[in-house]
Length: 216
Image (cartoon, one colour):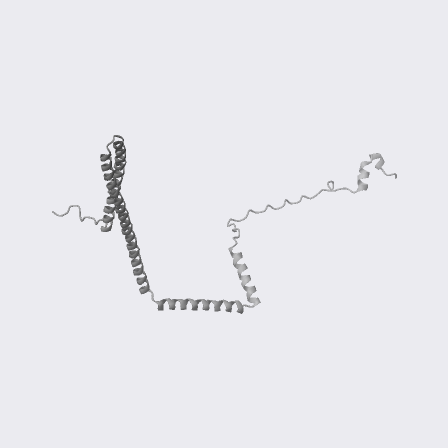
């Protein structure tokens, strides 16, 4: 039967990673051994002191010789730990250097493809065309700035004002007819009695009837 789960994914753990892991494990074991020997040396020292108190000098001397030999092993263990740590650091630094080199390789390939897509001749041509376009536009600006007279300037300002006025919205004219204005009422004729009288007539009417009669 074929593999039901498809192809096995490739592990990202490299041989260098495995080597570093093994070195660190050995270093940790040596450190545990160091702690064990250190505790044992302290116990043997206390035991030798007790043997001397009990008068057992020969046994105390033999125990101290054993202690001395273990101290030498402890020094060798310390050197081995230092060598392991140095090797781990070297391997880790080599991994970093390899990543840097791989990054530089990818960057160089990208730059190479970009250079192939655009050569130096293309860059020079684009720069020349850009400079020509800038120079051409500068000439047009100079021509426009020097060819307009004062009359032309006034005409341009007038046209600008007209365009501005066109943008102003005027009120809409109503489509329905306006209501008719009512005609003024016709004036009624004023009678003689309603007209204002002159002062002599008013005074004459104000007098009694006997006084208004004239002598014959």
